[in-house]
Image (cartoon, rainbow, N blue to C red; front, side, top):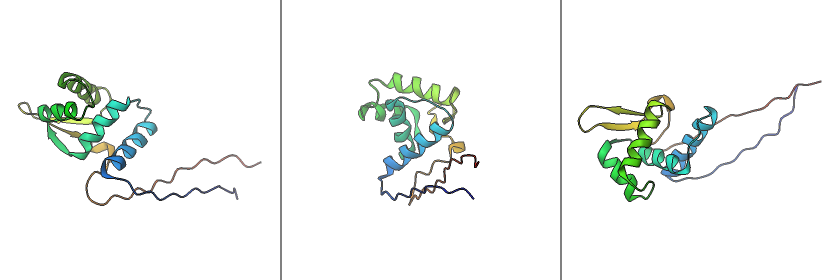
Length: 123
């Protein structure tokens, strides 16, 4: 039987940090590359669960994630169409949120239990 080195860590995080960690993990596992600003934008969206598009774009500018609301919109369009990370719903006053397929927990008490391993061949 192969022996393994086990690493266990317990860390307390704030809501945005734990959302960001889940997003980083999802993107790493799915080979999706995001800039720090794009990651911060998705983290903010996760913290607000679902938002009206125009309000969210203004909020992301207020939080100094992007410089203009149009830049936020451009990224959100890319995140929806090319990366499938968010959804947009409605025609007038669109609602946006993180896509359910990501399975990102954003509300309440959150405990993450990842089991990630690497096994070498025994000789």
